[in-house]
Length: 282
Image 1 (spheres, one colour):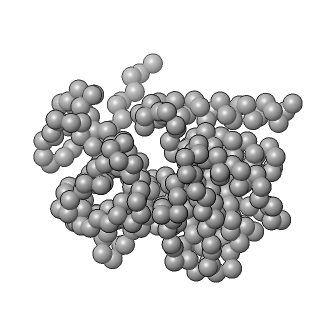
Image 2 (cartoon, rainbow, N blue to C red):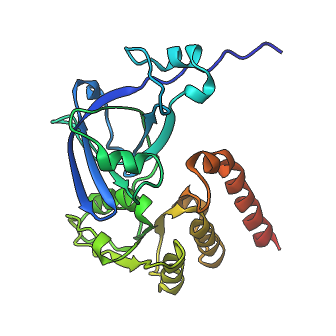
């Protein structure tokens, strides 16, 4: 068998920090701009995301930044580390990209960076990707997530037209982490306060207790993988929601680093699907 050619490294976009804002105790907003964003586009989906590139501590790369050159000249442990963040807003006129970061002190990589980011700082990223937007033909919408899914849920709520029927549940630590959105539909979010409880527990309870409206539902359920798994089973098996009407995924996993979770995420999701298919066939 002929050897497959190596996959070409994706091109990175370069931008600069133009504004920062602490919008809640655990959420920092970073606005990026600069000529590097010429040609960037995000608008088809409400869960558009980019993959930020962070150099390992003590590692510098030659300029101009080039992923192909980095991969060729640096050992793998010196390649950039990626962190995925939802596009909170994209202004094609001003060429400004807004990203919201969950910050819990010094935990993690991207959150602490966002908390100390300075205007003018260079940021590089890959993307955008994405795949979900609320279907205007749906009879109603179910939006469920924790802080990690809040930016995507906010964009979806702002996209929905007046008169849309929506049940939106968002779990945050406490009332100080709630946000307000400008929505045409006048939609109210049901805020659930974790206050020390396990991540996602309140979301599972809320969705299970919901009196589902009649008709076709289009659902978006994202956040910590444990509660996402429970709600995937509930929606597919107990509520009989078709797989095609679900955008559902674990953004992160309690007890796992981002790298550790990405390494097992595909296999974990496939196992969940096999378990549900087996239960449905029983």
